[in-house]
Length: 330
Image (cartoon, rainbow, N blue to C red; front, top):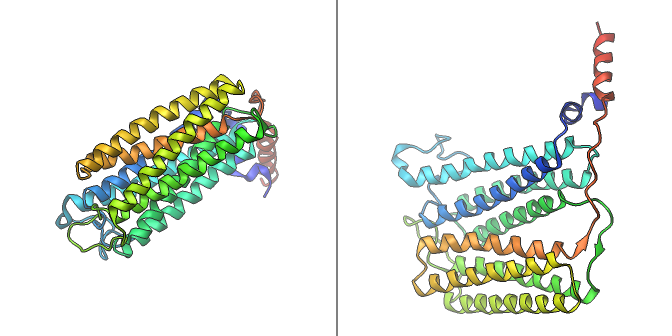
């Protein structure tokens, strides 16, 4: 298909978004990814996981919840509808990244990766309902949402830098320490889903929902152990960065991570010793997103990809070719 007939190219010929707009569109995807995690948690914590007992429709005879389903049906259906809002924001980010010149294929690929993650997670959500809130599927649903958040954060940060080959700002051992921090945090999040799957908030009060057959106290202790590991790695990375005189922005992001970890740990302890009240569990899920964002910001600040190139005028050839084609067909 000629570029002149490509809808993306037609938009690029007529609209040149600023670098700030692209960054804001990418950041909006980050915000929406967090919203999806938190509202998904709200569905489970309000016992609305089976508020719509089937998928993709809400009931076998209705796309939307019926009055008999009450507030649980409304909550579950509203969370499903948020997926379309997220798709709209992801679509805007893709179009904005594609329209800006010079064209950055890395950004558009990250945008499309988000789209496919949203689509796949929607299917996982449907499987979650059809399997009666199987805890393993519920955990994979959360982890897929975290994968979406990962790509959204990477796109947001990449929108502020250039496309040169990555250049490490620290020595290789320091970079390896940051990798260990990322892996440990990822394991912390995975273990958190196991704690959830073996805990009290199954997601539906009307049905005997299967739980992961583990002692919740023991798996919670493992989760706490990993919190200590991540805190220790964060402190170690800060001291190492100070010793090697790393860029100030990196050290500042490590301090931000440490602060978020302390807040998240506080919420977790209060939650545990108060028998996991719904509001604190939801806050803890929000904190999980903030911790992961902070870790990614630290990791990606340890390399440099050059300055963001200034915008150049979009080529008008595609628009002219379209006019010529239309004239010749008359």
